[in-house]
Length: 281
Image (tube, rainbow, N blue to C red):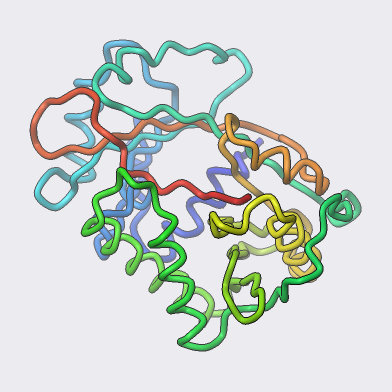
């Protein structure tokens, strides 16, 4: 059975970049946005093994790139049931961030009403340049403080342009939660035939735990079923966001994992990954 998580990841890569199967890996590159970690990575066909970091980093440099243009390493793969407890300590000692994500899916009949509703927000598509400026400022404000601002700005401008281009092409929309005219949450939903994929659920830090995420995701999912039979959400297994989505009827269907770290051209440990993290609630 194909991976819905990875399949919908590649929807964005194919739109804005290049996807090439080279045998051992699928190589994903986005020439227009070198700071986009998961637009420039190796998709592994099997999980990495202990001590394999040297070969992987050499292959990454060969197929994806190296400093000064590509200043990170990033690898992703599907997790099967017998891989629980895989030892990634060797990679983590080299400064890699290891993340396991749940791929959650829902059909129209499974969608549940939110347990926590915020009646004070207006959920609508981003339309004006003012809306998109507010989106940009919110994403920049809520980024991980360990992410270098210069690199993050370049990344953010690149993905903004990609999303807006996809929207103009009829591939999806971006939605905002507005409270008294202020953008306090947002999420994208894009489509590949009859499959919809959510992107970057975010709630402003000063407005969390107010039901904004529940209300926003439910409203967008309900609208999304007009175009899709299945909606897909990918969430960090160790973050509470997955529980929010499950409360709305999304169910875990598979898992995927990733390793990433910054790369300034030197061999270091303890580096930060610089990967964007969604902050739903």
